[in-house]
Length: 148
Image 1 (cartoon, rainbow, N blue to C red):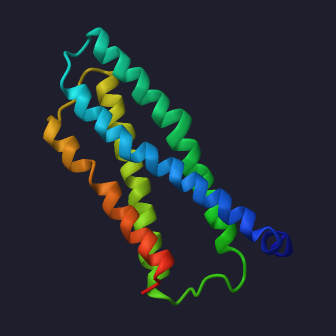
Image 2: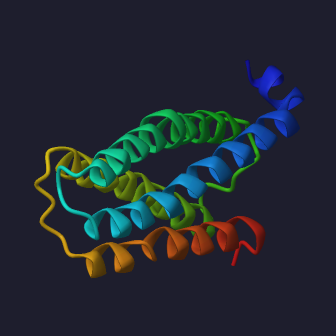
């Protein structure tokens, strides 16, 4: 299996990057939808439209992209010699990726609250939350490219 992974390392890396881009695109957009959702009356036609958009973005794009990101990343991490397991950059990146997964989970909880017309957060909360994935993505990319 290790030989297979090493042989197709570039393909797996390409898949990993594409999945990460799709995951990040959704992660950037979903909190923005929540900002707009806060601006409409619960139960209105606009609110119902946002519910559909939020559900489809999370379930049909973000979650599958996150799963592929983890699977491809795990496959890459299992290639002997590819990662220096003692390097601080690797653990920093991994912690940020886990933080991003936690943010994904929070987005799911917020979506459920909107779906049930019980959102408790103001628009400003989602505007601030919208910055979290940007910061995590910046750290992840720096850790991978610069490896400080």
